[in-house]
Every structure is written in structure tokens, then in C-alpha cells.
Amino acid sequence: MQDTTYAYQQLLDFTIQIFKKIGCPDKDAATAAEVLLAADLRGVDSHGVARLTGYVRLWEAGRVNATPQIKVIHETPSTAVVDGDSGLGLVVAPYAMELAIEKARQVGTGWVSVQHSNHYGIAAAHAMKALKHDMIGISMTNASPLVAPTFSTSKMLGTNPICVAAPAGNEPAFVADLATTTAANGKLEILQRKNEAAPVGWVQDAAGQDSTDAGILKKGGALLPLGGDREHGSHKGYALGAVVDIFSALLSGANYAPWVPPFPAYVPMPQRQPGKGIGHFFGALRVDAFRTVAEYKRDMDDWISGFRNADTIEGKDRVLIPGDPEREMEAERRVAGIPLLPVVAADLQALGAKLGVVF
Image 1 (cartoon, helix red, strand yellow):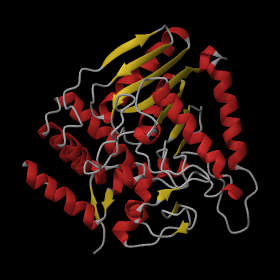
Image 2 (cartoon, rainbow, N blue to C red; image 1 turned 60 degrees about the horizontal axis):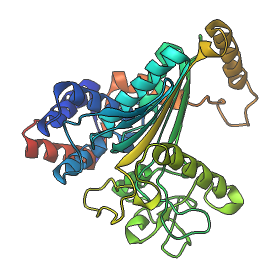
Image 3 (cartoon, rainbow, N blue to C red; image 1 turned 180 degrees about the vertical axis):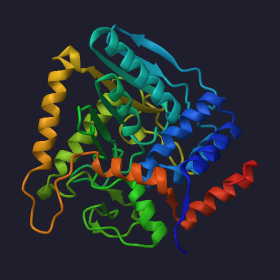
């Protein structure tokens, strides 16, 4: 069976209705749906509507609060810690990012760490909020422990993504959005749906040996840090994932390392809970807190065009700027629609039938 294409607005309306069915207020349902669909628009299909059923299952398991009382529990002029009250990360994260932006507007930079939250979608959806304010946005989160540190068989970290979004002038914004693993877990899920093997360097088996089994995590295996193995720099990916954990959890009071709550609702919660929920970290830096916006944008355009005009390897089309593939994909999908694998479309149809929303 081939993929079926759906209009963005069609999927957005459906997703809003699903979130409302689990009790989200209208505004929160719209916010959550927009963040979730941002992944599908940008081609990060592993983190879009394919995960909608997963969020509903978390709510059914009592791990998501559809009506959270999000609040600031510690604050300085440039920093804050937010308690998400176990709300959808798709709602808690935008609140925290807007707070970081407001603090940057007031004092030049804003830094917000979050506890007691849940999975927040793609990191770029939050960091990019800063762009329209002529600010650089930073977004990161810890996640379910699926990653073995270099030389380990124990799963101690999540895919722990980092996104930095920097505005430009005439050039499109620079948006680097990456997991600190060789591949995100969602990529494995896509391979499983397609019944395809994983490339070498993505995962290891329970004994720490290389594997190409896309379902190896269910058999005691683990994802590998960015780099894959020590010889290719996996210790650097491990260090980056640890940095995200420190910023997201150790600064906020969220759970950390192997005690981060798992995304699948059927996976038991860790017996030990040193903190509260999943943790995020956000930053906003006002460009004019460092130099004039005009000068910065002039030089940023020059920097970007320099990379675009770099000599290319024979057979390669061009040098890409981080954010180019996602931006181009979004432009295409807003017009042509969003393709869904048959298994994902069937899952959404079943979810709609269960909650009384026509897909």
C-alpha cells in the first residue's frame, strides 16, 4: 500500500479535536496540534501525528494532565524554573519559550528550565519562536532512556535533542535541530513500519554489539550516541546528550539519566523518581544585546552565502545550511499535503473512531 496525502488543515483540525476530546481547553488543544503538525510539515514524520495516539495513551494512563496549572516556581530577571504540572509538553514548552523571550526582551537574554513536563515534539518548533523577535532561540529536552553511553550496555540517556535557531536578513534563518544520537528513536519506528533494517552505527544489541535490527530496543538493545562508536566520536555525542540532561533536569528538578519517564505508556515508570517528570531548557538571546541587528544580519547573510557558494564534491548538488531541507519540505507540504504511511493513517482512523472524531 502506498502513502496517502492529507492536507495540513485537515490533519490540524483532526488533531485539535482529539486533544479537546481528552479535556484540553480550546487554546491548549490548538497550541498542541500546531506544535505536533510542525514536525510533519518539516519532514520529521517520526515526531508528528504518528505520535498522537501515544499522547492519548499517556493521558489514559494518568501521566498527562490535560488542564495543567503551569507556573513559575523560581525566578530572576533573566532566568526561571517552570513547573509544567504534568501537562502536555506540546503546551508547557511554548509557555516556557515565550517566557524566555519576554525575559530577553526585558534584560537581553532569557533562560528557562522546565520540570514536571512530558514529550514536547520537535525542538525546532520552540527555538524558532525567537526568530520573529530578532532573537536567537535555543531549545533542548531530555527524554526516555534509550541510549547507551560509549563503552556501556546500560541505557542511561535519551535522544536529548538540541536546536539553535538564528535569524538572518535576506537569507532564510539558520535552524540546527539534531538529536545527540546517530538517529532518533522515531527513525527506528519508521523502519519498523516499513520492515527495513537499520544502518550500522545506529543501534547495538543487549551485549553491546553492532546490530541492524530496527526493533532491537524491544530486545534489550540501545540507541548509540552521535558518532556510533568511539573511533567515530561517540564519546562526543554522549557528552552532548549529558549536557542536555544537565541543562534540562539538573537545573530544573526534573528526572534525569535512566529515571526519565518513558514515552510509551505501556512501559513501566522507573521505580526511582529523583525529580518531577521530563525536563526542558530554553534560551532566547536578543541580537541587539550584542550588536546592532542590521550589522548582525548583514554578516549573517554573508556567512550563509559563503557556505552556499562553497565548492562541492563532484556529484553533489550544493552545500546545505542547517534548516534548508526542513524549510523546503514545509513549503512543499503546505501546498501538496502531508503523506502518511498506511499504518499511521489506520492508527489515526482507529483513534478517531475511539474518541468520536471523524478522520
